Image: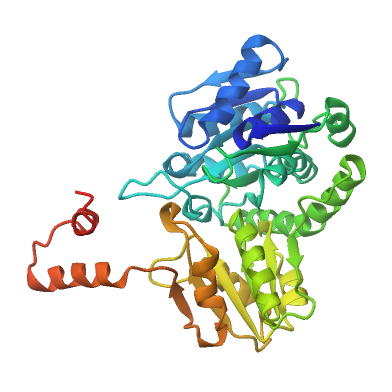
Length: 410
């Protein structure tokens, strides 16, 4: 059913249709609307049987999800930014235990300084935790990915993180085709855990493992990620059969067949990039877009097959590795192997800065002139003033406050 609905509310309603039995959450912007809506459904009895657990922290939220999942319940939570970092220890535990928890991450920048707006630094910090990471381009895809996430998680017994851009998607009101309960039930079977705590058959979960078996445990966790490269597109295909639309999968190519320049990105910025590529095409520039849905596992074969013919690749990233550069770019370069395609990194949209078509044109109109690492719309004069202060006085003060003062914000 088509409805004009906020992204957070759409995710909440679709998550409810997946019949979670335990929801545990601690509010943090910009995911709060999701768990608020779910708590209201539980309180009214429209989502039942389900226990909504109000916890004292994000660490507790993931800990409760671990306990619920280990006891045989379908478990769900949501978080963002510092909240994800606070639960990091438990995030790794959930993956190491192979528990099929589904979690929404409403992507938001990590401080300091404090910033509540969107970029991908929070989820990227957990990319090696063992969770499958799926990134939504639109609110429609965000809703659809949650239905698929439970199916993927429970087939493999591995946790799945659905990432949607904070505020850009979570608080945007747009048309979303919400499924019916009958459709979701036809797609998502009742939860049958691969492992469960049972008093009648006691077993230790998460016990100490020494050097004699730890490598093998980690290898099996890696093997599940590799198996997900087949499961994710298979689940997306089954989803399309029941729901009548294509959503999810590993990657989304757009006008890549004859493209000399292929732009790779993930999340909501893909819409603006596709519009920019359409304008480039009108001027005769053969450009295309390859949107990544699955960051972990990383779709190396698909990247190589769809982008390996290009003359150049430009990776637009909303996070980066300090002291190195692009995060996704490094994965793309590894996927290309010995394929001789130059790969450029463009860091864009950090802390919620808008990524506009005009800005993208500044780097894509002449991509051959790009440096290996470019910071889109970087205010060089602002940086230079701060560097001059640092050179002039040892006690130059905090960068953020100084630059805000230069901008007249303090």
